[in-house]
Length: 244
Ligand code: OAD
Image (cartoon, rainbow, N blue to C red; front, side):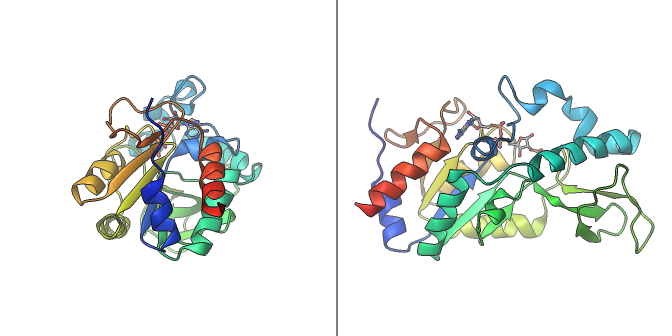
């Protein structure tokens, strides 16, 4: 196997050039949260169509709500991983480092990350289905009513079959256009349109890398562009090289 080529990542970080990290459930796995796919993935235990679609919420709002309340509780019980912490330290050094995440957890923010955009929404807020008003996530066992319009509140996440927020997509496209180096950390790259980010970045002229203990078969990367290991191991090694 060809050795991982650190050159472009180190150069971008050391010269404060745009450097984009694109994260998925794998980075939060090291904090203790489950991924979606794989043997112990959430989608082995739950049927997506019953907990993560607008139709499921219309049919059975209480069950869908409880699924998210359980995930919120799990999230409160964990701390950001070493990888989240390292990424935040790198941002403190490089003002042009950005994070796009598919994760709905707030572990990047809790590690101190500032430039982070959530493609699939966030667990830390609820949103009114009717008027769109947002508020901090409720801890109730049933979806509360909106204080403004009486509509039903829902977790502020993107469900299967829903569009991504146009503002978020604008930011994502803008960051992709500005960056020369993209590092995909811990995503199976299976859910569109999020899965198209690496290809779009490549078409826009960026060099794209992958960090994953189980390389994604669907997407091909040039030699030296796959780090076959965990997120924590990758960031430890990157910080070590930056110190040398
Ligand atoms: P997946 O669960 O599909 O993939 C997680 C990836 O993390 C896999 O490729 C693992 O090999 C990798 N992984 C495991 N341990 C790792 C580690 N220690 N370090 C780095 N990588 C590791 O999660 P996502 O790709 O994030 O969408 O899933 C994408 C979307 O599918 C989610 O945002 C969610 C889900 O359905 C919605 O809910 C809309």
